[in-house]
Length: 181
Image (cartoon, rainbow, N blue to C red; front, side):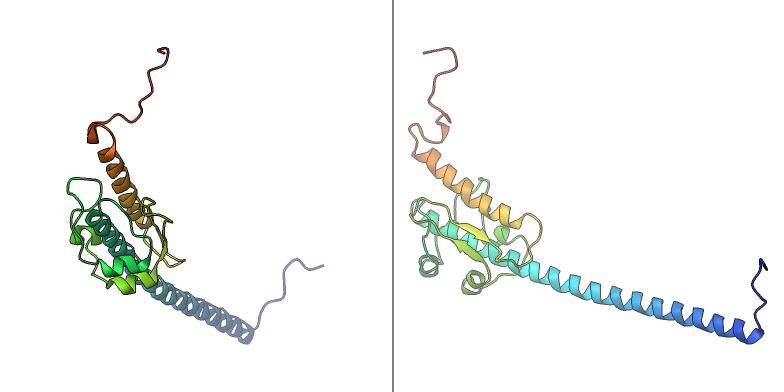
């Protein structure tokens, strides 16, 4: 048995080089096409995420303004914040934004009706329940949903502290320290 394959003819070697070159060219074209498609999809997704974030931030700000105008009572339907779009801004110096511009975080403004249609809102049954915002499956940047829901939760906690006996400096718990009865 011969250990080495037979020598290729010059025609066979040329044909093999052409096949290798064509495979390499097709591979490079596929890589370029996939990269361009990936960048296009990523850019579109990021643009959509910015729109979703603007909608979340706009609705959250409107809810905070509504609650500030109504002594801490949160809206219980879309119609409630549509009627009261020019509410009083929430107090400054707290863990929520102090102005519409800061709430938007540098994103372009979005109409409230458009924003409400884009996102999901789980309204509370009563005015003391904080609404919960979600993206309805749309892309969003990391942490925006938690941030805007956190603003409203902190606002509700602040209102509870204000209503507690002794105001904002009231202790978290009225129970006696351990060992004392």
